[in-house]
Structures are given as structure tokens and as C-alpha cells.
Image (cartoon, rainbow, N blue to C red):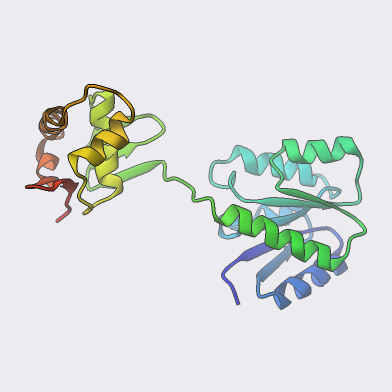
Length: 227
């Protein structure tokens, strides 16, 4: 058995049951829905893959996929379209909507299983990055490149932000000055070890009481150590 959950959405109940049976034989946990409306009532974030029919009722598979991709909570769920529509335009539409694969009816169950395994293998290796990191009242908003403490923004330079992000992403791990130079300054030249110390000192002051959690390990480097 494995931990993958799959939702099959198709208005053909018999086809749903056939796919459910065969995928469960492969060890997947499978639920079915006979319309997009029914599927949208479920907690879609709990699924690792959607098998989605295109030709359904008021909400087509394409429309449902578009709705999911516009929602940040469901945008990353892999989708395989299963449909009788097999024209080039329909295939292009499916992939433009972010589909991971496109299977035309009639199909063999073996083909479906192979494609399901391929998509899950490919997408499961991609780890979704968190949009925020938090330690108590200290919050790093990664997309906005913003740090707040108790909802008050703390003005950091680009390097200070990147150092704090690096340390908080790897709580308890000690980074040497060389590690920090490589990860934060990359290939920039003429950067001295002393530059790291200066930035750490400024960063500690700016984040106030949280500065004490940026700990110096003499002879080794720095880490963010939680209580």
C-alpha cells in the first residue's frame, strides 16, 4: 500500500467504479465524484492527483481545472484529463490549464495506471515551498520578502533578510561564515568574513528580543536556536 490519494471525477458512474477498482488494486486510496459540483464540495487539498473528465455538466473539466489553478490552496494538485475529446485544440487547452497529462477515450486500464504512476512519481519529487516561516511572533513572508514581529514590519536589507531566512529555514543547523558567504553572497567578490559578522550584528539589533536566538558557535559559525 502507498499513501497516495486519487480523486476520479467523471459523470459515467461505471467508468468511475472501474477506475477506482483498478487503482485501488495498485494500492492507491481512491474516491469518486460524478460531477465537478460534487467534487468541489470535497477537501481537494487532501488528494495527490485528480483524474478529471472534460465533458461533464454545467461545470466542465476544463472549467473546474481553471478554478483550481486560480486557488493557491489547490493550484499545485496534479491533474490528468480523461476525455473523449482528442482534437489538437482540446489537448492544447488542457495543457495550457496546467494539466500534467491527457488521456483520450477509449483507453486501456494499463495505460491509465502507467500514466498515473508517472505523474505521481514526477510531481511527488517537487516539494512545495512554504510561503511563510514563523517562530512565535517573528514571521518571514517569503514571496513578499518581508519580516514582521508581532505584525509590525522590520526593515531589513536584502542580505539581512537572506541570512535570517537561511538560519530560520534550518533551525539548529550551524552555518560557517564560508557557508553563509556561498549561500547569500554567491559569486560576489571581495566579501570578507567580517562582513558576515557586521550583518549578523545589525540583524540581531533589528529583530530585538529574537536576536538572542541567532547564536554564535565559536570556531564554527551561526545558527538559529529555538528554546
